[in-house]
Amino acid sequence: MVRRVWDGNTILIEGGYSVRYIGVNTPGAGMFNRPVEPFGRDAAERNVELVEGKTVELEADETDLNPGGMMLRYVYVDGVMVNELLLEEGLAHLAPLGRNVRYARQLQAAEAEARKAPLNVWTLVTYTPTITPTPTITETPTITLTPTITLTPTITNTPAPTPTFFLLPTPARPGNLPANPPIFRVFTPVPGQPPPPQRPPPR
Image 1 (cartoon, rainbow, N blue to C red):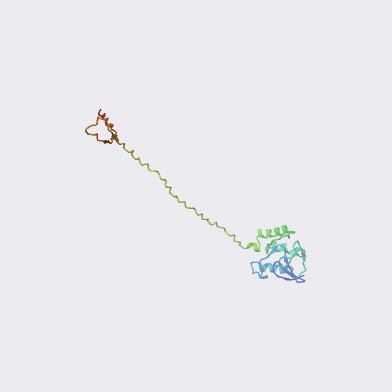
Image 2 (cartoon, rainbow, N blue to C red):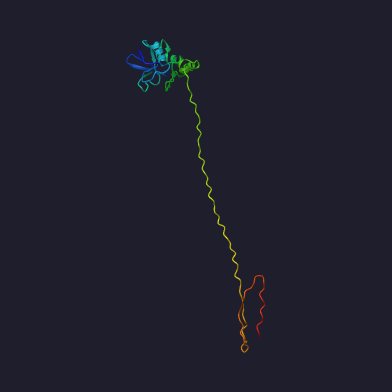
């Protein structure tokens, strides 16, 4: 027997055990440190109407307890699965099932029907965040051109030394020495002009 309804998806049964409905996540109703959310009280009141003070049937699936230590069960009253009914009336969202997939298709279909209508929680405006792309600033590297200095060798045409011609006298033979010995003359040729002819030495 159900002794108390905690909220839209959790009940307290005889023996002091708390039971959480498999696959059902109703809005917060102020219990378990959850704030009161839209349709949270509606889901809790509907759950009271369905099961509080009544004898229910519990069906387990693969996972026995949730991390909080509550029993995970499918709950039936008068042959009706309360889990499916709450989803069908739009008072809950489908909760992650984990390994408890025995009635997954049935519960998914119930949620889809309420969403299509839409009913209760599905009438709330859901804001879809708009993602605005932020431009990415790419830094373009600055290319600094370093001038290349090419050293061109300077060719200096150094004129060839101008040859100097010496007119040497013919050595005098003994006994034939001139009265006045010849004087050495230095001749520097002028470019483009032939050197003067040499006089033959005196005999």
